View 1 (cartoon, rainbow, N blue to C red):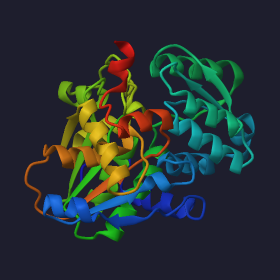
View 2: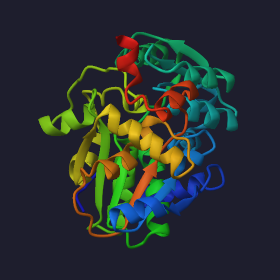
View 3: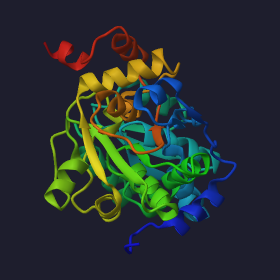
View 4: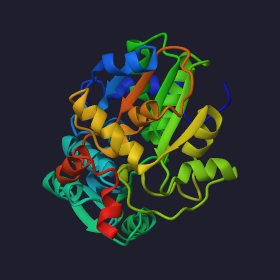
Length: 333
């Protein structure tokens, strides 16, 4: 395999480190999607994770890798919600304190939950990049330890443990569908899955609105994109022009990236609720959305779909379930 920042042995070490501190989430066969697609379709129910998303894996791996002195200083991160929630939980479990910087685009339900968990919350600017500027100030002036939401080897290795669990549950998996934002989850899952089975396809899925990693992969280098509101709000934000980890892994290991419309994401959320009896946020629904849209073409074998998070504003979820495919367009009208 190409020499990459995170490899299978790194992920296996992370799995041993975080064992007992994160849930080994269920993997279930979807009868409805299996019948529709003509191949077995398994759902990795990562939204059942303790903090409601996969982010706890990477955050826990990072916090456990810190020295006692670093934990005492406290950790800080920029977040679209789920990373902040996970880092706050992981820090508190090890006797540390988290400061979380978020933009005004982060839904209030996610902000409120992070505050409830005990974080010092800072709302800064209208984008993830502006929130990150505040993080860097706090590191420089207050000595806090920065924990990136995705572009970090310990984060990627932690997220990759999810890929190990997929492969163990479905050893003959032919295609893995994984949400794609800054690339921490997609890079980790791809490194884990392809480390075990190099011919397995790993496809990144994201929204049409502000798909930073897709734009960067197309350009052959990290680029900035405008961040806009989306049902898949957890997939928002840039990848960082100085990206050192996830861009390289996604570029080397992802077999494809598929963009999904707001209507397709909404259809994925509705299917999860009505057919699978699962409440998931827009970012967690992109794998189901891709299968329902037919964008994947002919499938040659078993498919694993990562349902990455459940931390959705329930009022928004209700609007989507009741048939509003794009609530943001309605609010802007």
